[in-house]
Amino acid sequence: MGFFDAIGDVANRAKLTGEIALLDRDITVRKKQFGVELYDIVDKHEKQKKKGANSMLEIPGIFKTIEHEIKEPVDKLSKEIRVLELEKRGVENEIELQGARQYRDVGTPASVGLGKNVADKAKEAQLFVQIKYLDREMLIRKENFGLAIWDAVSEQQWIHEALADETKDKHGLGVIAGTVGGLTKGIKGTVAKTLGAFSSDEREIAACVNKAKEEVKSMEEKKRRKEMAVAAIIEKGKK
Image (tube, rainbow, N blue to C red):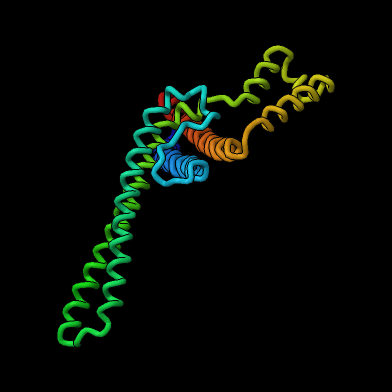
């Protein structure tokens, strides 16, 4: 290997290593985003069903096969979020009271009102900082939830996926692709029936999971190709 070839390989390896690090970061960010999205969807459905903001989350039926794997992080997050929501509601009530006091004190003499107004504004600003802090704490917990359950959720196979895989094993890919029309039609009909059995809530959850899985899979594949390129450069340098 020539000197300039070696310099070029070092530069390419450094570039690829940096790109791999960025992909690692993006994969982690996407898993965290998934935690936020999934929790918000499930939480919305729970509140609509139970008509209350303080109820604990129940694990959706669509996750029945991995319930024991995700129950602990679901319960933990649910409790933490409910505590933070109650605290936030208390701060919001305090802000409303603060506004009512300011409205009530409109006629206060200027000599007294100036100092009081400054104090009220400072108090109000402090309360808004608390709101932002609580929102941030809830976001962090949802993101960590996404990381905690990702492996279990991403490895779960939906019923229609399992059916397709089983049929591939028994009959070969050509059958699935449509070589045998009757069987393919039957498979599609069963899949459609299976998906149709999901509630609208479960379909929304499945869409959230599938989108995240596809995006993470795409990034992981890009990372794998770059790692192979780095390995090739290292192997080349040994010759």
